[in-house]
Image 1 (spheres, rainbow, N blue to C red):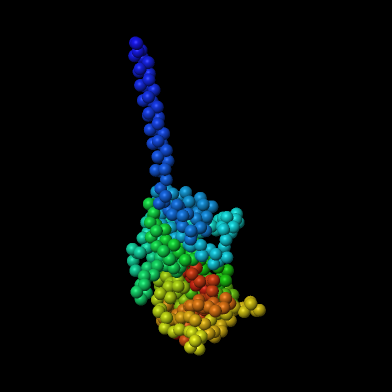
Image 2 (tube, one colour; image 1 turned 180 degrees about the vertical axis):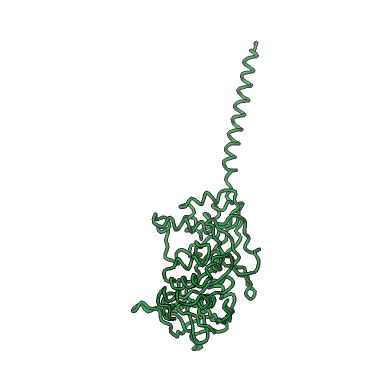
Length: 370
C-alpha cells in the first residue's frame, strides 16, 4: 500500500504541535504556583493568628499589596491584644469613619528598608523614618541579663520574623503616631498648652525646639501655668524673655525619654506588698466626682527613682511606679517629677506625645527653680 508522504508529514506536525501545547500548558500552570511567594510579609502577617486585626487593617487600606512587593520593608505589627485592650473590634477597623486613622496608623507601622532590631545599637530611641514621613523610635537596652526592645516606649514581643521582602516585629501595644516635625509645633497644636506654648515663643527658644535634635519636654498645662501666676497671654508677654527661657529650660531634658524608658533606667528600689503592709501613693479615679485623687493604696508593685539635671541646670527627681492593680479604678502606672517640696505628675493619657526631635509629656505643676 502506498502511503502519501504529505499525510505522514501532517501527522508528525500534528503530534509536535499537541506535544508542545501540552508542555506549554503544564509550564504555564506551574508558573502560576511558582509566582506566589508565601514568604512575603503580607502572607506572613495574614497567616499569624495573633495579628488578625493588623492583617485586616492592611487589607482595608490596600497596604497588603504593598507588602507583596519586592521591598524591602520593616513592619512593626501590633498583636490582637493591642487593639482589644483599647476596646477596638474588627467592626471598628472597617468602619468608614475610622478609615483615615487606620490608614495613617498602618503607614506609621511600616518603614522602607530592612531593620533587624536585634542588631541596632544598645541605646535609647534610635529614629527610623516610617512611611508616613516621620520617625518611630526604637530602644535596644540591657536590663540585668535581659535584652529589651521597645518601639516608642512599647515593648516588642517577638522580633525578626523574616520574610523574603523584609522583617516583621510584633509589638505589644498601639504605638503613638508621630505627626509632627518638631516639639514647638506639637506644643502649639495642643489647646491645653497655650500659655506654655506662648512662653516658648516669647523666650526665644522656639527655634531650638523646632530644630533637629533630641529633647524631652515636660510641659505644664494651662491650669498649672495659672497657678504659677500666668493667668493669660498678656501675663506671659510682659515677663522678661530670659525669665521665660529659664522657665522653659527647667522643663526640658536633653535626650528622648518615653514614659516606659524610666522603667529601663531606674531598677526598682522599693516594693509595695499587701502581705507586708507597705503601700504606694497611686492615682485613684473617683467615679462619683469624676476626679483623680492621690491615695495611699495597698497594692503590689514597684517603684524606682532617678535624679536628673534639666537644661536649666535644675535637679529633678524622677519617680516611676508600676505593677499590678487590684482594682480597675487604680492606675499604678505613675511618673512624677520632684523639685524640693514640689511634685508634678505626668498626666495619664497625656504622655508620650511624639515629634521628630523629641517627646512631650504634659504635667500638672510648674517646676520651681532650685
